[in-house]
Image 1 (cartoon, one colour):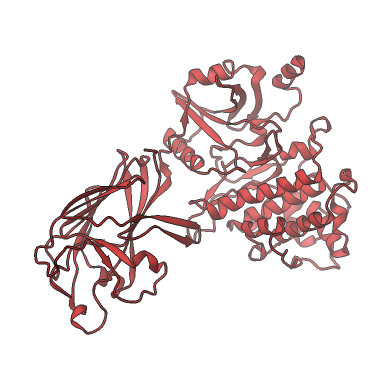
Image 2 (image 1 turned 90 degrees about the horizontal axis):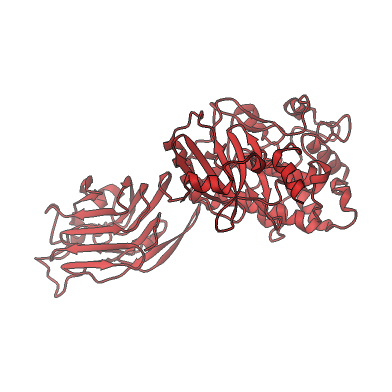
Length: 568
């Protein structure tokens, strides 16, 4: 069987797909009729066993599946129209799960008793629940917990899987009624089971490389293969024995981050698979060596392609620029809304967008990524990001939501259209930087003038205006007015109408130099440097997705480039 990291069962029911805020979840069917001594093995990496007879049953045959007898009105009611029963012991097994921590959600609804004043309302069901052999619910009464019959209650637990198997057991200890509404009505009842990974503590079995393999691939970390030097150590280009070209990030042994945290972060990155995210092939942990092996990006970063040294720039035509912009939006939409973990990147910028051989964009550097825990959006201990790309509410108040990434995306979109760097382009003395000039042109009704002059007339005017308008929507000073990234994708692809542009509340047509924003962005130009500067208040953490400046050289005369020039 293939190792899994999640499990969803509609106990006693048919296959169902439930739509939620983070995407849809499909629950496997579980319609085996059961029996007094039954073991059922599903084809989807789970099984159940049921033991016991309903000894005082008034019916001719035992029913091990309960069906709803009243109208259900709770959310996701289809999960509760049926349930699996057992007269004594019912155990579900998750098989071939990846080792690690999981969140187990047990869905209950009492569908065999009524909530009126009839005889059927007098029943009382009580049973115990064990997870991995540990008692987690004692004398559990569904009706009491839910506040009535035909109402859903979901109980959440954390379980640790160490031998690839999860065991959830429901056990009747002889308590409660046994003959209401008819004889043989007792025992545990379960409507659905959800098992989802805590990706921060999950062994996702990322590809493991030996130090010998890495040394062979990089020619023993030959200086000629060194393609970058970052804050956490050097990065080398390598060639695996199967012909795969890789980028190896050699993390400093002086890092304060221990191997446990290192492995945990690898688990997070490994779980995030999307065409517009840089792929992590694996890692190597031997002695004091912490090495990460990434997909190699042939065309470096978007920053270098657009406004790097002239000899390193790429001629990006309009269709390519549009495709890159849409790809970045799709990657962020996945991080914010589609992955099981809600991720806020916190450092979206042109240098963190890498380009593969087909010039398709890949978002890199999750070193500053924030797992966005529910209702926890304000961060006071750490501000991380890059000047010029940081959203105002985050830079000034430390208030972080996924809308901070939306703002940064808007800046990158302006750079893609204009071919100008947010930190280096100052078109007029009274304009602080690129975003200012975009607002000036928008107020004048000539936003199209921001399009890169190198394109001449060879671009789609409607698409360009759409991208520019969406970029300004994304950079609204009020984070509540910024669109979601899924909405951005729809607008960029022309599937939805572009929202009306609401002018920045901090400016007016008489104040086009945007003095209200000037105090925040003036510091950008006080730095005499050509590369954007990352800022952080506290100690840096290891970035599992390498900085583009780590993966690829900033200095043209590096050993790698000199060696490559001699070979050409």
